[in-house]
Image 1 (spheres, one colour):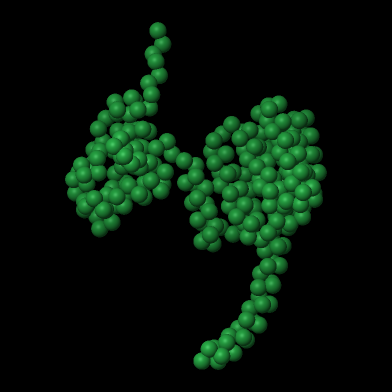
Image 2 (cartoon, rainbow, N blue to C red):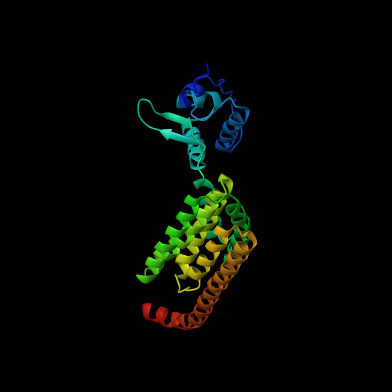
Length: 275
């Protein structure tokens, strides 16, 4: 008889006991987090495993409970553990979340480590790979999902809801990423599109009537299995969007530069009035 698949909790309970050592670093919480990551790598901790109670962990690591909590919070933020309150609560190894990668990319964008030109260029490169795989693996259900997305984008355009239209357009690319069947492509695409959505929100949505006709041509190539034509159509559309985005950034920067001198001239007067 085939063996029954055991639930995660049962498997986790059979995992070897994790081995932790007392930490002596000035940044003890970082060393604690490193040790827990190591236990995951060795397999002594698995998804669903429950870490020892807080008091016991603090004793094993030789740190205060406040230091331990700092380490656990950093691991929770990284998506490696989930903290559960209550009588049956504790710290459990989580299944992980792609949101960690998405949020990291957002942080890099907000800190200025990623600029709009790099963002859109990376998107064009990634999209070429995604489209090739989507062409090879497209199912009737996938094609229908793309058609429905295009219909929704058309309705948003007719209603003048450009913010919704921008979101629907981005979802078109998420559908394509899912069509590859590769979760890494889905995660990376989602990260890029999430940052791009922030970028679009900053510069404001604008009229881009060429997108829907381009999508129709793209879908036709996809249905016909014409990979090279589909890739070329997508790249042409994205590069045109890129020029539009960067043009708006340049215009905004020029406007800000013109306003700044006038604002500086008004500062002394404001100071004089205040005095």
